[in-house]
Length: 105
Image (tube, rainbow, N blue to C red; front, side):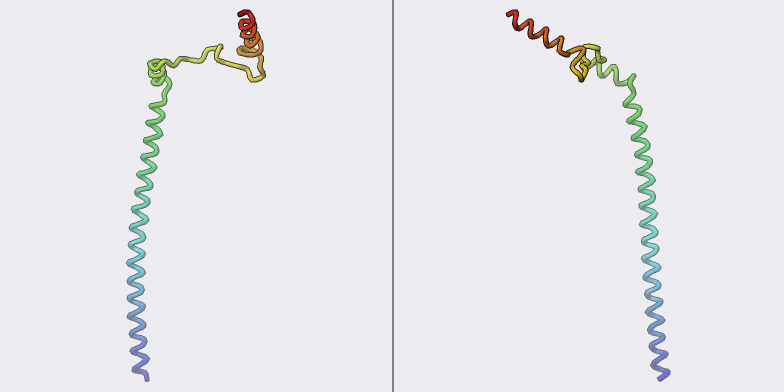
């Protein structure tokens, strides 16, 4: 009887050793995967920083102004503003002027 118990314990020990080896191997594989992901994250963060700096450089007003003028853009003038309450430039007075001009014809 002790002979069978010893064999069972030896088989259980070998099974536990194999399971421990498999767990250790999987853990190391997962650690390598996590390290690779951390390196990729650091690279992506560095890329984002570089892209933000490039965007800030490209969006400088002193760089954009000559390009805007080349395509015909200019600063806003006061005649382009219109008040939302209907008074001021483009308000009822301007509409009345257009109505008077149409009635004169």
